[in-house]
Length: 298
Image (cartoon, rainbow, N blue to C red; front, side, top):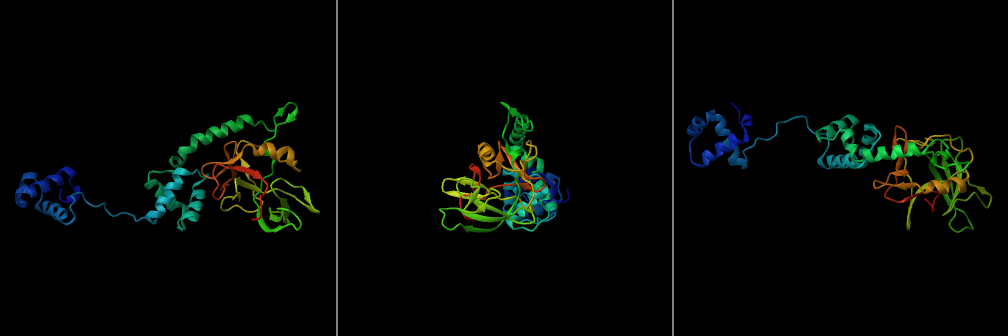
């Protein structure tokens, strides 16, 4: 036991206690069978810093500042990401820290939060929701001789709004040009209810928004998503309708579209996601309805 860092807390406390009883270095070393240099180091440390435990030994320094580590810990505990890369991408966006996925993984391990443990807080709920979705979805199950309407009828795609203008002579109608990965942008006309044609302008799509009393937010795709990427819901499969009957499909589907407490858009509790890139979410609106139209200009 040649170094004070190898002593137990009890031994270090005993050294200090003997010193406070005015015993000499020689007496303490003889009584406790310790080298005099070790006894001296413990006493000097106690006099300078009023502590007996040694400082942690130097290891690999953290690449993240403490405030960034707190952001990462909160995200890992409160949110579920489809992959480590998705978590790292969202963390870089939220914190501004330029670190790799490997660094994020190492920091999580040092916090005692593996990807599995960081998401297990909601894993059971998510798994239960997915099982419910799979059980209720039999690919266009017939109910009373007619197709049961669910979200697989919709062809949900990531889009980029290129332009928004208010239509002249209308009360709150807007026309938008939206890039959805096709050769030409689509035209969307929207208000508080779906509109198929307004003053000669044909609406070719709807915009997915989150709405609360007095506020509307457009749903945001995950980082890395590009116009045309398909948005899917695990457990709800099937080919989307080539021509959407808004009145027939949108209204029953919207009853089960809602954001959760982390602003993630869900259908019957299952997230809307771009496979391999992450989930779609509202910027700020939690526990609010998701609607297939736009309530105003963007």
